[in-house]
Image 1 (cartoon, one colour):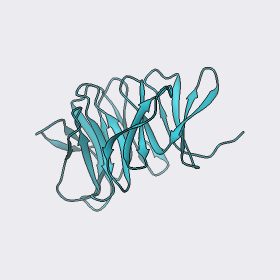
Image 2 (image 1 turned 180 degrees about the vertical axis):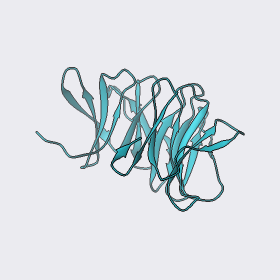
Image 3 (image 1 turned 120 degrees about the horizontal axis):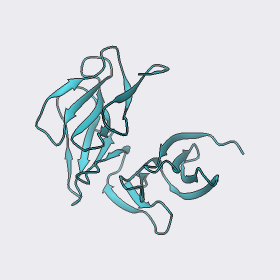
Image 4 (image 1 turned 90 degrees about the vertical axis):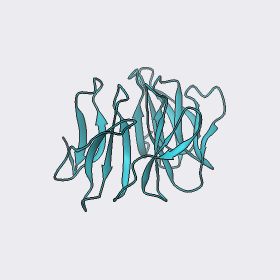
Length: 188
């Protein structure tokens, strides 16, 4: 059976994936066994740093649940409107997410407090923590076009432009030494 999906996130162990179907459901895929299991209704799923939980956009805000489906989803960030989880910080337990109402990256602490992270000019999104948790890559259109930037986390610290001709969807290499991003159809 062919499935139309909108989002895929590979587990830290590389053996499983979270799949977001066009119908608005989140499925768990076992890449070794080839099985697929419905987890929840929602969108844009990502793995927790330890690969034990799925985090996704659901009714009423950002939700998370055990990735094996052993318990119902709990609300992490109650927020109406379009909010998308983008990255967990393995070192601090913080969650970066995008809020469409403010066009900004927000951070949820392990204690449940939320704060706007960057501020300043431009629309910011796609916040991704480095594997060591000390940097956050993101995309901003403050210069007129979307470019990829990296900033110290939790800050304060320098913000450095990584791309100059445009860029989207930054992803760190497993060792944190490289940053990949999209430019049109190319991955750089």
